[in-house]
Image (cartoon, rainbow, N blue to C red; front, side, top):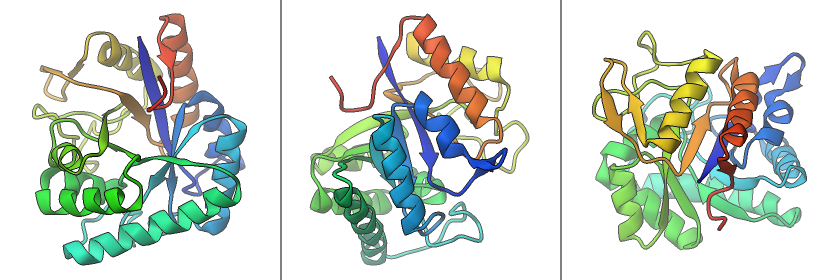
Length: 253
């Protein structure tokens, strides 16, 4: 039994005077690197790539809307052409920095509002999938299972990794509870660990209403801007190892 453990990093989040990247990277198998628009810049991208290489972590692009004010978590209406250009710009900038260090971009995960919008809007999902196919047809798309993003990825001939969230509550339809609602973000370590073990071993999760729903998880995410992220990820990594669950980057056999 195996699972990928991923985190969104390179977003300039600090903890006890150090970026959370240095505290988290040794305990994950894949990293999603902010591409300079919702957060980060060329320096942080290069630094995060270098840290990922040092920790032997799979590297992925984490593009979002050009919206630092709302950290990319506010939906911005865009045409398909504009969205394609926005994503390609971010992919090319991260690739150039990765190439300079001999690193390879393994996967793609949209950020924030773009991630959620593409899950429900087929036109947006198609725009993203078509851009990735043009950029690198071997990239793995990370997203919510059973969504338009999954369907669009397969239609474009791309590989897809179903993502589950360790620190976010679920609605009964499998979507994530909106961040502005009580209970949307989960920070208790034991609760996070217990629910993730069930995700992997029994492929299910308890929703915010108390119901149980099936859940496919190829990769599990803890958000890097969760104040408890360093301890959550360290404890989750240890729990997986204790249960004999191998932690491997998506795409590894």
